[in-house]
Figure 1 (spheres, rainbow, N blue to C red):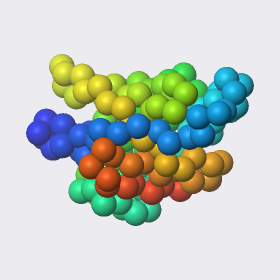
Figure 2: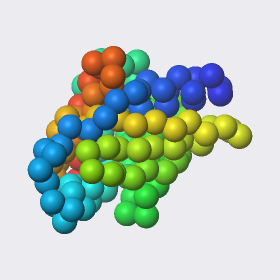
Figure 3: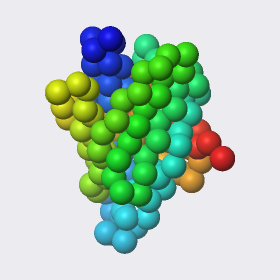
Length: 126
C-alpha cells in the first residue's frame, strides 16, 4: 500500500510551480492563498488519479487527499508563497516535499500543472 501512496502523492504533487501574476502585492497574494482553502474535486487530469478524488486545504496549513474508489488518505501540510504551492506529505514514516504550479486559482476553480506539463483541473465542492 505504501508504494501506491508514494505514487499517488508524486502524481498529484508532481514537480512544478504556481503561475500567478508576478506584480501582485503582498495583500493580494494573501487573498490568492486564501482562495485555496476548501475541498476540491478533481474533474479532469492527465495523471493516474481517478476523477472525483478529493483534495482539502484547511486554514491552518494542512491538506488531505482522498482517492476516489479507495480507502487511501494522504495528509500533510501546505503553504502558498508568492506564486508557489509548497506541500509536504507524510506517508508512513517518510515525508515528501514538493512545489507545484497553479495555473488557475479562482473562488471555484483550481488548476495545477507539473513540470512534466501534466495538468489537473479541480472544482471547489460546495
